Image 1 (cartoon, rainbow, N blue to C red):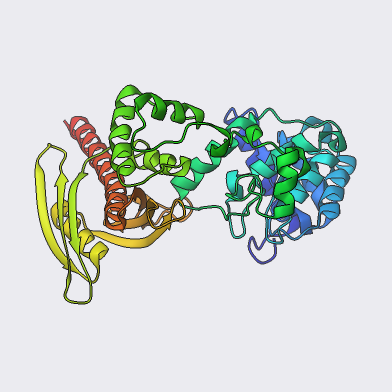
Image 2: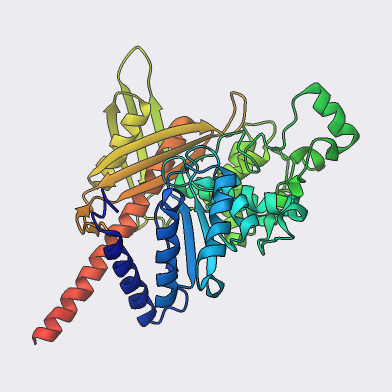
Length: 434
């Protein structure tokens, strides 16, 4: 209030009441009021402003630990105190919103729920500002596992979708979780210690408080089907169903073609390979430009060069050659020569899907261009919108080009939408003038 809003407590209360009343006047049946940095706020003032916004029509009171400062017992007491000292609180739902600056977001959220909060604001994979927010999968599974110690609390979430949701968020945001991330990390259900392995072989419950099946995770070594170059459509489709994917017949044929290309070069195709290929082949934006062929040369004996053949929106093939500082740079310059959209590469990253020299490479890029029609919600200033893209292939250059084209296809789609909107607006303006 002092340094950012530069308002007195009385002014802040007046503004809060006015805005809540305004939201209700627009017909919103559920209005949430969130007092920023409630964890460090003066308690008496907090009780007072919450009372006033309830009178103005607030139905949800979201209590944030904005900077992730409070400890679990503090946050739990904060929720309990608000519930005990705020007049009219019985007419509102108490919510929590915990940041993870000290690694306590999940613990604070659970403490808030135990103290009386009945809405918990969380994010998949714990993504969010700075160190992130309370993690949905951690909070949900903790409540499910320790329900008896949380007063019988439960959620309506189907935990079977946790793994797929986590992977989808990773794919679209480009924010990959660390291997040891609770619940959804790659190592969350991996057992390397010999003592642990012995216990697992005798009884899984020895070291697993959660079954992988509970979150929709399947372990490849528990099934008899091992995919390879001799696997047919039925086996591959069965594996997709086993992994939780449902795609159309056309999508399957497109995927199966890519699968056979990989299977010819790898002795065994893993679940991770399958998911990387699915993401690259099926879960992509509208295709304006697609990759037909790419050939690159590089090394210490000369310049790096690349030749790229793309198929355009009209089905025509276009070819370009370019020289660059490396094979990926050369390939990207060749793509730019064909598509001719001013583009700046902001981020580039590559990871291997599995271990080994024959692993599939997944690439993620972020690009910006001369598309400045986006406006910042708060400042109103125009800015160049960023577009992300991902690609996967055994060849790192091919993977890189696929990711670049994915981002450029998103940009092309956005530019087309902007132009169409401008044409409609211009047509309406002309009609109005006439």
